[in-house]
Image (cartoon, rainbow, N blue to C red):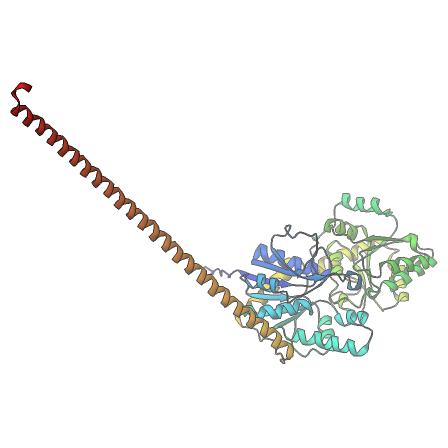
Length: 490
């Protein structure tokens, strides 16, 4: 009979800069990690920046919030203060045996502080090409280089580095990362299979989508670096050929208004639908199911999670050849790969959209060839967690810097504080015990005094009764004597 192995429960601290109410691909990944780990493997605790007027009671796992400031107008989300003592204290009290950071900035900073206080390993997942974000946020080249250097140094401080695709790993190498990495693909939380006919029809009615007209779809952040300009320019060429189509953009982002304006300027505003963010996963699934092709000419994304979400619903994608989003996609078999320009996309759409059954068949093959669930993804991650915890993985080598002293000092300070807290609790416990002993002794002494008093009262009563008896006896004796001496009294 085959021996059944029982694995010890695992407890993971998931750290990220974004989490609901802020939704993006990485926040979605963290939510799925937390859900699957809590349901299947033990315990997950999420640490993320604080958002006012938002409750975390809806989650089946604990969420620890650390202090943050409102930077949504600048970077699209609140910036957290990762060295918040209250957050470090709250996370350190959790019975965690591994940390997993999903952002190389504040999340890793919090993780490094926690690692010093808890003495547990930390893994990191590289989800996004942060060099592009840095270049968009910082114009000065020297500052860009300094920021990228700091980012890479922070990543190299982690014990085990994961990437969501080989392209993401190569991007990380191009930034100066010299360590080893493991490819750990993200999954999708969209169930495999098309949405119901009722859900598809509801979406079509709400947004005026004609089922007889080919419908194209984009889902993601509305940012130019997602390749949206290529899509709009290609659609402009289709309209010039008098080809009917509808284009649906699902999502929000910093370039949302500019993108809408550009579509109107190209004369395709009437053909485009801009829904804004859609948080209802079933409604999003209906969008995938209602479309004919998913247009995602992004070279920015490191994994293209939405490509696999689309595939889950039987929707094939048009992608840039050689991009990370196109990894694992076979041209003409599970998707369509093009060069990175509007002409290539326009020509592809013109040739394929004339045969809608062929597009549906391509989507079916994408569903069967690309689908990878979050359940499968987290299963792989937990297996790697266990190897890291056991020490079976060669940990990342890290050249110490000045910041390491900072985190070591934080760890030393926290541990010293914990010792003081322990001594205080011991002293308070001992003081309580002494006070309880004194109270018990006082009550005992009071009982003894009460017993002595009652005994004295009893003795006094007995003495007085005896004296009364003696007095009465003397009185009787006196009467008798007097009667004997005076016969007249008889």
